[in-house]
Amino acid sequence: MARAATSTSRKAKSKSVPASSLPTWTADTELVGLVFDLEATNSSALYSQYTIGLHAWFLDQVRQFNPELSAYLHDGESEKPFNISALEGQLVPSGKQLQLEAKQIYRWHVNALSQRVAQFISQWLTQLPQTLALRDAPLQIKQVSIAHPPTTYAQLLQSSIEKKTNVSLSFVSPTSFRRKGHHFPLPVPVNLFHSYLRRWNDFSGMIVEPESFLEWIDEGVIIHQHRLESVKVAAGKRGSVTGFTGAISCGLSKAALANAEFTQLFYALVRLAPYCGTGHKTTFGLGQTRLEWLEREPTTPTELLTNILGERIAELTALFTAQRKRTGGDRTDKIASTWATILARREMGESLQVIAQDLEMPYTTVKTYVKLARRALKQENLE
Image (cartoon, rainbow, N blue to C red):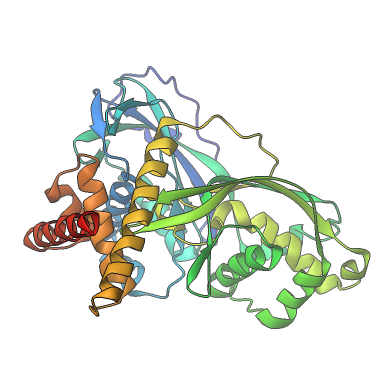
């Protein structure tokens, strides 16, 4: 199991994390959650979709240290064995962007969901770079600590025995599911536990037949309390997501408790939630989940800007989709979503170079798309 990270002053002037303070865990570990303390080396602008940069930086670290694992994370199964959070800390609004404040500490979560990723991170920490290079906003890595303790799927299952109490789940970043081709922004128990079960079946080695378990969830899980708020955010590389934040408290009916095997799995999956997150796009900061009831914090500048961008992308996507349908053009959602994402981010003041890099598209293509999007928008306004 892990050795607790030694506490260090946030004002420390060392340029790298002391090896003695880095967390460690055993080779059989399959799940672990880390939190990085990052210090802004200077005040600098940060674009609203910076989680794409965090995602890219982490994957580039994997590529440098373990090319084989990198190829799997890029080309493997749809369920990814890791997730990340956005930055937590004082982000100051500056026009249409955010600003990192010099000498401020920001916290960033990284969770591993498989033995392979957990062992990579363990080795990576021994050669951890001094700086997280986030575009033109370098962040010095001051400390790495355990956020969710190292464990295995079997240990989650065994530790869940005889737990018959109600549980609370808080969704601390926008959370959403895909249902019939659309976003579904509600924590319906079947959607929640289908999300957790997919990760369980992919990475635990203890596959559970989904249909009967999810039918049991649908019949037996009772939501006792909820506090939810819907949001529309820019998420991932293209498009926007309609999601929710907040908390729910739930438990099992007496009839459901009669099924000991599914009851055990229910509590194991609840314990899995903080590691794997909830819903989709968790590798871009969505769906961060905590196993407790957390009161809603006031809307942060980051959330406000991301919400504005998300709403604009959704508005433009709907406009371009309808326009292409009227003119008999290509009706694919991907084209409309891409045009909308590029134009909305350009309206927020981001450079075409940054947008092209984030979308992994040639600069000339992005430049052409923004011209076509502006032309389509002008045409719409004239009609």
